[in-house]
Amino acid sequence: MRSRQEWRQARVIDIAHPTEDVRAVTFAVNGPLSAFDPGSHTNIRVMIHDAPAIRTYTVLPSAPGTLKIAVKLHPNSRGGSAWVWSLNPGDVTEMTTPENRFELSWRASHYLLIAGGIGVTPIFGMAPALISGGQSVRMIYGGRSQAQLAFRDELETLLGDDLELFVEEEGRSFDLDAEFSRLPLDAESYVCGPIGLLNASKAAWQRAGRPMSRLRFEVFGDSGHYGESAFWVEIPALRKTVEVRPDQSMLEALLQSGVDMVYDCQRGECGLCAVGVLDHEATIDHRDVFFSPTERAQNVRMCACVSRAPGGTISIDTGYQSAPL
Ligand code: FES
Image (tube, rainbow, N blue to C red; front, side):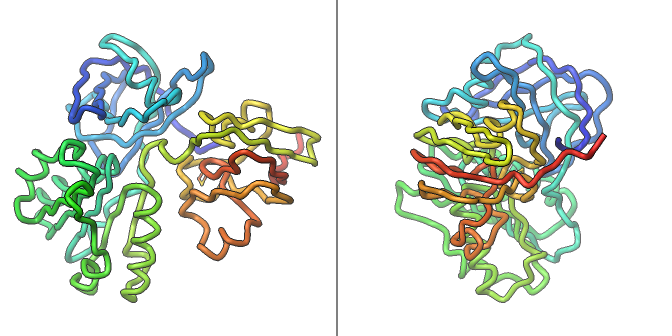
């Protein structure tokens, strides 16, 4: 069960490579589309292991009537990124009309945009919108190497000195405390990147004494869902045990085995997919940004869409009952 979406037929019309490991795919979409909304995302029907699945990707600016996504190829991927990388011009699938849960507020005196790796995709749409709206913007953007900074040239042209790059290979990283301490009181920051960056941003924002309503963040792509090892999930109330393969999220495995689940974002952000943990022999690898560090340490609940228990067995209560007919 997830929020209502409008599915449209979509045909691949262009493929480009902003970096060696990032592929940008543009789809011509049947039916009217609203104007590009920075931070929005679309859901795409993909095939994984010959089974249909849904993946969610940020929408990039593109021509009217089209939707464009950029997807990093994850090593050994057998999931959504591998499927996107298998597409050719003319291939047809279905996509939802964009939704936005990472919207610009348009109420701040200054915007600090922070991108880590392929988390640049929503930020890449926000920067030009803010600039053309006459807003005060600074962006910091980090990646492993210069070659892996997708859309760097476009962002340098757009932002000039208001863009600062941090490259791990060159020994540079963000100083979030310094960045946040310089901001005006009513500034906002928008962060997209790996979970470590998001949690560090939340902690630094709180240390700076800033209201959490002015820090907005999004976990990127589907990189947080998968793991190196399988694990097993027992659901005593249903008398079921479900194997979660390395290339599946726990949510996907539960749904595929017929377990009713409530979910939405599939990025560890909304908390709708949270299940109760009754017992766990394996260490739980919490990968969400929904629970607080204290709640994660308690191991009482976990987000099924991203969190895992590699190599072991956990026992859960899905806490979801279908409405009686
Ligand atoms: S579906 Fe939103 S946190 Fe899992």
